[in-house]
Length: 250
Image 1 (spheres, rainbow, N blue to C red):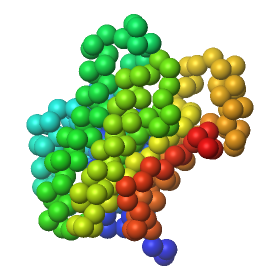
Image 2: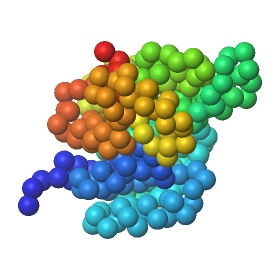
Image 3: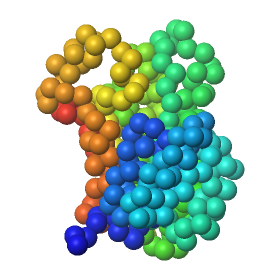
Image 4: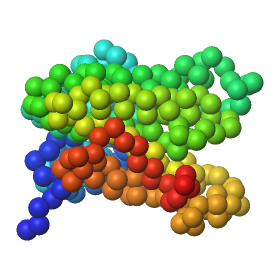
């Protein structure tokens, strides 16, 4: 019986009903973690995921909660601590895009992205700090993007939110390091998901060609990096941004 990397740990993952978040939840369960996760609109998908996770023989529970709502995030963490007893790993994955050029961008498109992507990270991290300080351990993993490192035309709101996550992640690493709480960010590159399936195949082929590894990333590529940062294998890594991008940002 080989030791699983996240055996005995409890993780809270936001925005896990589809895409990268869903794969992180599945990989965490496979590696022995108990999984609490949130979803916002996809109730059926959330319930189905709960069953899938339980099949790994771990405790799993989905919560309908808006990470962008400060009070809701606080209530969520309290409920998860009551239900699971502890949270060892927080994965701030919830996020949205509202892509458009700045000249066409509305104030609402800016605010929605900043709230869903950046304020949510503040909300959950602030709420989880007290229990993590009490147990004197924890790993906080924030989903940024290569767009937050590099910028991208037509995504100034998204890029600003993802760059903000990086500054926040590093600051929290400095604040909480002495209490054995780690804070890192992952910056995925071009990851192929349901969302990219809808794009023009010629455009996608062009993107792949521009990447040194000559392929788009998979949700598993991101989930595997997340498992590493959640596990004790990365015990001496904090305040870092790990680009999972096939060499796109090199």
